[in-house]
Image 1: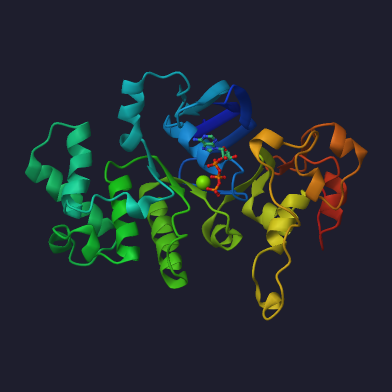
Image 2: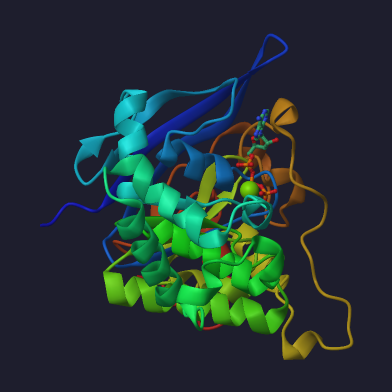
Length: 333
Ligand SMILES: Nc1ncnc2c1ncn2[C@@H]1O[C@H](COP(=O)(O)OP(=O)(O)OP(=O)(O)O)[C@@H](O)[C@H]1O
Ligand SMILES: [Mg+2]
């Protein structure tokens, strides 16, 4: 059996805030295979970005990994020296941050910004770095890349800037690309093009993609697997088919119900009642219970244990069987 490219085990991340300890991520385990696409779904504040930043070794001040393991290509990243992490970042693992469109330097041509990534990692000539930058812009389908590389960010449209960010991320040929809400700021047609580009790059380069989104429509398009997070924990994980067709967590079903589809046209969209909790006020038991139609006493009292439906489909819900049965044409194994 080959080892997954990324293997997260029982990750626990805590914030120190005003003397209090806040559990931002708990018991998170996740495997990502080479060349596959995994989407991370969940409402705002569920811990999607924080999980990604932990993989990158870029947790914000005040946050620390209390326990658990993040293995990349068999190598433990938790506790790795900064120097080693810096080497891995860009070279092996790259990330497009949530606010990427504002991350480009406005006063430096785009090609130079990409070339710089190489010069940080490797002693190569400016000319060689530049030609690699142009090749990367070409790889993300920027027409006339050699000329456009001399442009400044303001000369690029929003979609082109996002392509430039992707070019910067893949220019060192990483094995894992984390894209945090890569299409949120873009209009719908451009969103689809960016997702298609990411999927093409995945296939061409055997890249593993970790795609963070709160849009299940984005997920459905190209993902192999999905994980659903709620209040810093996994609610459910499975193949994309299992998650979309046989959700076994009421939260997943709620997210799916929130997807605008033809059947909702002209009507109010169904949404999950209420809002996700903040870290300093997490409900006891299953954190989702105050918003859950299936909640009973046990949900208020105890964290749900895992229920495995298949080798890939796992959910953390006291009423998983019931939640699954509530789905049309649910297949229980
Ligand atoms: N620097 C920080 N200091 C304190 N708390 C933080 C910090 N960054 C994140 N958090 C908290 O950690 C939790 C997870 O945040 P995270 O950014 O991972 O959410 P997210 O799922 O990416 O949400 P969004 O969809 O809004 O991007 C939230 O409750 C957030 O308030
Ligand atoms: Mg985020």
